[in-house]
Amino acid sequence: MDMTRENIINLVLALLLLVVPLAASQMGQPFTVTLATRIAVLALAATGLNIALGLGGLVSFGHAVFFGIGGYAAGILASHVFSGEPMAFGFEGSNQMALIWIFAVIACGLAGLAIGAISLRTSGVYFIMITLAFAQMVYYFAISWPAYGGEDGLSILVRNQFPGINTMVPLSFFLLCYGVLIVCIGLFALLRNSRFGTALQAARQNEVRVASVGISPYGIRLTAFAISAMMTGLAGALYADLNKFVSPSMLSWHMSGELIVLIILGGTGRLFGPVAGAMLYVIFEFALGGITERWQFFLGLILLGVVLFARGGLIGLLAGKARHG
Amino acid sequence: MILSLALEQLLNGLQLGVMLFLMAAGLTLIFGVMGLINLAHGSLYMVGAFACAVVAAATGSFWIGLAASLVCAAAAGAIVEFLVIRKLYDRDHLDQVLATFALILIFSEGARWVFGSFPLYLDIPPLLAGAVPLPGIEAYPLYRLAIIGVGALVAFGLYLLISKTRLGMRIRAGESDREMIAALGVDIRTLYTVVFALGSALAGLAGALVGALQSVQVGMGEPVLILAFVVIVIGGIGSIKGALVGALIVGLTDTLGRFLLPPLLGLVLPASTAGTVGASLAAMLIYIVMALVLAFRPRGLFPAKA
Image (cartoon, rainbow over all chains, first blue to last red; front, side, top):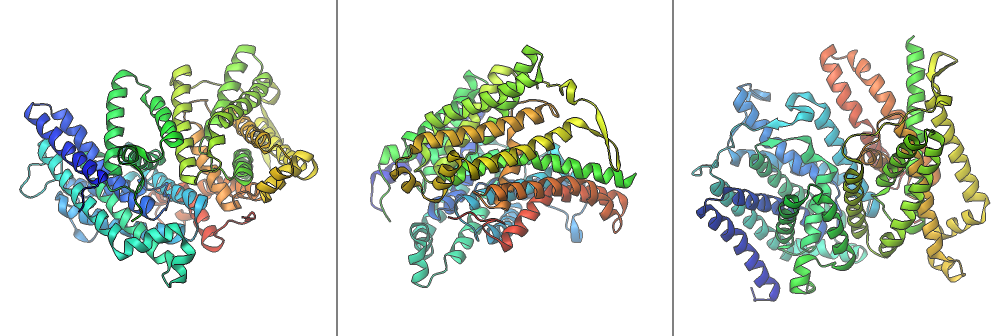
């Protein structure tokens, strides 16, 4: 890997996100560690979306659905262990994160295939609105279905477990999330530079040419959409464990909007764009939220400024335009 | 008795459809002419409702409030168009989504700042209070009937405006070829502002009318906005006729689904299960209808020319 300016910035961001919570934990500030965990989990969710949106140019305005399904996978499996009531086929649920992640990823993969199969028949504005509508459909289902808390959401009374780690310790849980994030960013990089990733990006740039060399853009996009869904779903499972709570708000269209915002604040299609975006977002939320209850008003103004005047996001500002890969 | 209840639900569905049409007509017009996806349309609906509630409370007259809602929503729309939206026409849809998402945050938090989190209330005007008997129904609220009437009038008015007037001719020309109409000397920038203000006024009108049925509060525009999106996706984005048909489909499906599904499922399932399954299914029904329409007609029922 040659040391371009962007790579150096990526390295700095990765180290920053690791060192700050380590130092904060040493200084006895667990709240900072929790903020860093929030950054890592949101960055993971946005990295998932970045596969569809950044590489594939698929503006999904409904990725909260996968975030929420991942969250509910964690909440539902854990609730059955706690209540002692078995789920279907005598399965007792689980409070093991590894198993929960597998469930979350499979469920989101299937949901991604189903939603993608219909949505990808369309493009442009239709695609944006249809992904939004599907997410709303699941949102209303979660609200009206009483078995798992309905509108009130579902608490995870004890954070789920991971072998060899005490997940109740903030720093340990952070390191787990950070590890997952780095692995997934690695996967994103592998995907981007693979033959599949090249075809996906080519389909974004010129669909007709891709089709004319004998590659079906539909199949490539559907695969990418499903992978994207799985990664966002994994983040959802972690987010539920972070908050020890999952509710329909994880599925809401506001969440979908926020995930896009994270990517744009950081820089679309950039490897560490979601990390930079999540850092900015959580820091805004914390800093402005400390000053005024109305921080979303200022977030709106900042976002408007970024969209109108700084289109490359933070990484774009720092590292210049993306090189054509 | 059951028949009269069904007829009443039918009218409620019609009223919801008509209200959705007011929202969807503006959205689809703005998309058709300017190629812009405007998430902040729900905020203009909220502006209309707040303007009506505040002015009606100050003057004591719903009708002055209603006029104020049209003026305020159109003015807010024109200002937003001039300051922000204008810069987005030649951007991609992602930028439009984000910028208008940012506008929602600004409008919602701004409104909460000015009016607080408590809902305002708007009374139904005395002239339209009460209920009237209809064939098959003992008494139906006059106000809801009036909303249906207003919607029908607006639909007819829009039809006249677009097919019979010079402004409508320019709007149609803008839909089919933007560069050409600009080249022919029409001031396209003013036309865009006018169209945006017109769409905003319709959204504001819908907000004010619904404000008297529900409470007027921050965030009231968002659920309606998403329903309006479903409407124009079903109808075909850019088509006013599609918006009308889509709005009626969505309004009737949603209302009748909530009314009919639980008892229908009760025929095959135990009563308690049928209640919850029916309610959940009813909440999802319009999205299922949308998915079905798109599976067969990916560009909606009345696809506008690309």
